[in-house]
Length: 114
Length: 113
Image 1 (cartoon, each protein chain N blue to C red):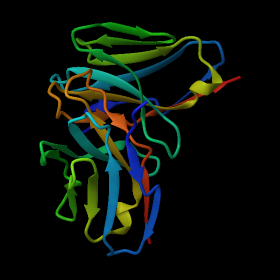
Image 2 (spheres, rainbow over the protein chains, first blue to last red):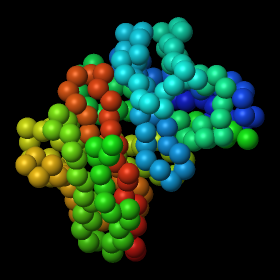
Image 3 (cartoon, each protein chain N blue to C red):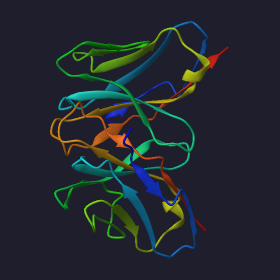
């Protein structure tokens, strides 16, 4: 069964460092998303991406964040200068062109900022 | 702005009994409502969804009910099994493929053997 894959599963970084989280969405999906979950809190929307551009972004997704799909398969989230409060699980998700609104999620990347 | 709310942070149910998880929403523009199941350190897994034009959708032990006038939906699990123990997130989405899914705060279900 096709699945969304994410790397790394866990990354530890120092505050102020750049981090890139990688995702390979399901191959025939057209819409891509990043969400995050701070420990014990809700799953929060960060950004949606379609046709090589951002469709929508949340207030969390400030200038320190960026996304790109450099090669038609990988979908990356970059945090330019990490802060302590960026520590969270980051989930990539994708969605086919038509459907029931369901997003397919990856297993997540745990980011720990020290 | 909590557009999707789950007022019960936790629920304990005996194995074999019914689990009822509730969810309220405020945005009338939502077209799809979904339930996701989540284990610690894993991504959310889709369980069941319902379109705004329906009031009930059933899939095996899982049934979702939608009351549009009350802006309320619920997930029924019958019979509950210990493997159902997880955090359940109610979620909602507008129409259109690019629409984000907005999650509630989650309800931690514990099914006691």
